[in-house]
Image (tube, rainbow, N blue to C red; front, side, top):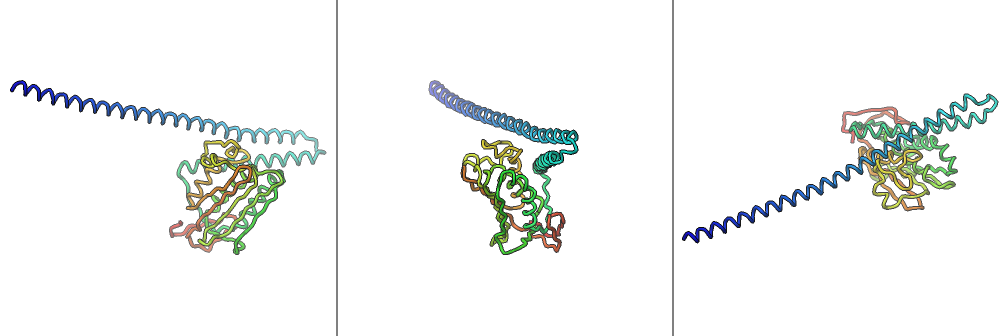
Length: 300
């Protein structure tokens, strides 16, 4: 009887020992899995920090370089003989171009900060889309002429002018970023085109089309990442704004719209912006989105 009791005790002990071994194995497996996750996370954090450092370095250079150009050119103008009017005009035009690009970069930086802080607010106005897009084309006239591009602006709809209730400032920033890239990554002697209309659902559709370098399928997957810079330079801040593309995505999402991309390498790129009209009702009107109104109704 004692032997039987001893045998049963050994069996129970062995079973319990096996259970503990299994628990220890499971704990070791969990620890190994957690360790792998931590290593992966650490790698991603290191990669993220490297990208951010690279981004900050790029953005610093793109701010410093225009400032240096402006200072140098303005100094040359002050030292230029009064008789060399044409030379002074050329340098003044270069200063204007550098200042324009610098201003645009600052706007993108401030917009990115606003997005990161979660401070986006809708500012709704009846916007004259024809006027807004025509003004943007005029603002980039010097850059367009420099690359000998043909500019095309086409209202494909029946509404002329096309009046649309939206956040005009944010829409202007979106189209400006797209137009900047369409110009700077286009080929000389080609075409840059903006098409726009209201679709059958009452949404505003704007297409920005170029005949330039195009974007590879691989790069299209990361095109809206503000911390990455694509091989063909599409995400550089100067003469093309990768930061701006990430802002575009955030702004379009905020407005409840869609941003679509069609592109083939060496064939060109088409960005299509589609946004719904705000449901706010007002008689107020603005050609340049500066006349603001808010209703008691839900805005979107």
